[in-house]
Amino acid sequence: MATLTFCFAESGHTISLINEESLEALKQKLHEHFQINPNDQILLYGPNFRALEKMYGSKVVMDNLTVFVYDKRVVTESSKLPSPINCMPARPTENTIPLFPLPLDVQGTGDGKASSVAKYILDELDRLSKVREYSEQCLAAGKQALLHLQLQLKGIEGTILTVQETFKSFQKSFEQNEQRLSTQQSQHGNLILNFEASLQRMQAVQLDPLLREFVVQRRGSASPLADPQPAAINTLYDCINADKERAALGKCAEIHYKVEEDFRRIKASFADLTHRVHSFASPASVVAQSGAVLEPMEEMHATLLAAVGSLQRLHRRIVEQDWKVSSQDPNDCPSDASLDLIVKTVIAYDRLQRTGERCTGDASDGQLYVGDLYINVGLIVSFLVAKSDEIEAARNSLAMELYRIMRKVGQLQSEFTHKLREEIEWMKKWTSSRSDYFMKLKQIAGLPKVYSELLGELARRNHYNKVFDAEVGLFTEKVANMRANETKQREIFMSTFGRLLPPIFFESIPSLKEKPPYFSASLTEKQRLPDIQVRPADLRSGSEGDDAGPSPSRAVESGDARDRARSNSVVMAFPSLAGLGQQSGGEELSALDALALQYNQLAY
Image (cartoon, rainbow, N blue to C red; front, side, top):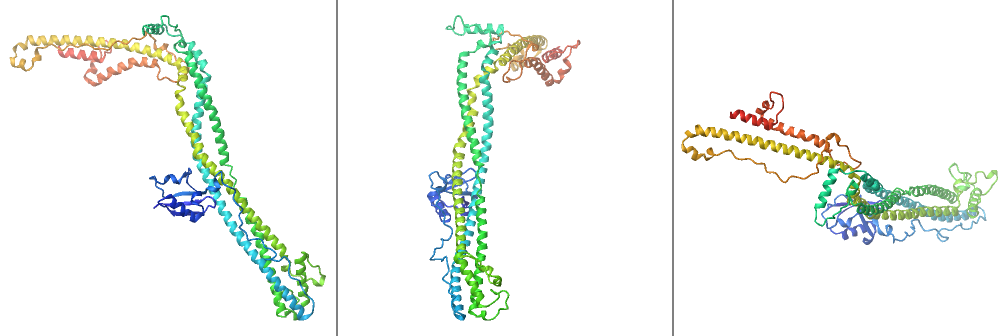
């Protein structure tokens, strides 16, 4: 079975599970870990946020995949705002933690007064123990909340990073197709803008008289229904249907500007999408603020513990009647163990609890007040409540931020997999398919150059036909001479040695009495071309337009070179002919001339 890693996007918590046979069983197992109902689970695997559901039933290997688990109630448009999270202890009431201590009775003397003060201290220790318990609960809940905030922050930052990395792959494809379509739009726009200028250049190109005469004759004889008075053809412009081409131009312009409008909209949409992908604000400050709240809470808790310790020592001194003798322990509180000083200390503490004011004694009371007892329980409780509210506010603030980010992630994911992908496919489509619409415009723009190349091609073909006819005639004559020589040789043989041969040889070789076979050149119908003769030096490069291939002048110039190369190949095939290729005057013969010369020399 495949092992899958699941990352809960809200908290960043990651677990590894063995894949189940069915998606329903897998979602039930995830429900046990993440407490998200199966119907509310969105399972996507990266990097392009593909749905895990599509992999079930397919043959795709699902081992070692990382699957992101989203809560549909958070990421969908119809989801409600998250409810406030109560992560801190309930606020104390008068019944749980009284704001003020019980009344202090310091009437009487000696043991009676000591007993009253001791009971007051016990009651106050009980009240402080409740405050300490509440403080400990606040600290524990605050630390747990901070840990949860840190996990949420890690999950949020991981989700943001995944979205941005996914966007990079789409961005690369978008920019490549955008560049191609932008280049094509520029080229097509130039064709549209320069259409009339191209027509004007065609009007300035006069047709060759021989070509014009040839075209007119062919058009007149092409059909019995042809116009007896066809329109005059004098320029290259007359060779096209300008009205039809202008109609095609209107259609191309309509397509071009519609594509341009959609293209601008797509680029603006992509720019906005790019901004939103990179505008995620990390809520790290919320987590840092929560961490800062815990420090003063810990300090206040330490102050409370010190106050409890001081009251415990005072109570022990009264119970053990150490106040009757001077204490030698400098750490005891107070240093003067007399009952009067203990009572004054307790009275000062009580006044501080009820009014928030410190006692102002005279100089003799300089050692009366103990710093650890300079606390006000009501203020401590209020402080803890305020800090708890700050932690809950931070927790709820991060929950709201998480909600907004996950909503944004959900929207971006939808745009990646649908809108952006469709826009990329749209650019691919128009880049590859619109060329057919604009082919006519390209032909119009390049027609002057194409016409120039046509003249060169006709001249080259006429040159070829002449050389071909001459070569065929020469070759036919040479073969006829060779046959005449062969016939003469056979007649000489038959009139001399042939008469002496026994009949058996003529019976076995009947062709000994036959003449050489006849040769006749069989050619297809001669091609009709305008008799355009253009010397290579007279050819010039045509008008602006697409490159139509090698220049006809180069083709004409290379015709003789090919003939020479063909002759040289014959010589190379028969090395014995190489020395026979020169006459006494130094004139170079063709390979066929050399072959005929060799035969005559051998025959005679």
